[in-house]
Amino acid sequence: MNNKQVEEVIKAILTRKYSWACVLILRFHGYDPVDYIPYRTYIRLLKDNYQAHQKDTSDAVVRTVDFNDFKSNKMQLVKQKKS
Image (tube, rainbow, N blue to C red; front, side, top):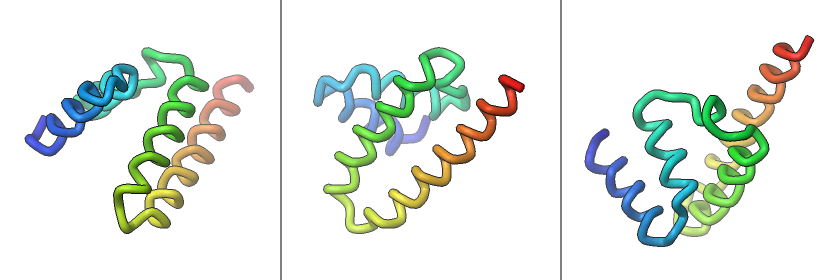
């Protein structure tokens, strides 16, 4: 993990968002958090934390598009696995 990533994890811990810190650690080390936590919980954490992060950044529109693209791709993958 680089310094910026470590700072994000520490920021999540200091704001008592321990689940989000775990997701960040998994993602930064190249693991898929969905392999370790339920899909619905992961999506909820993404929504909660990206919305909070959007208020702090000026590129909120770009982040919303990125999240929606990820969500739609993930939904397709889940549907394919069930079939």
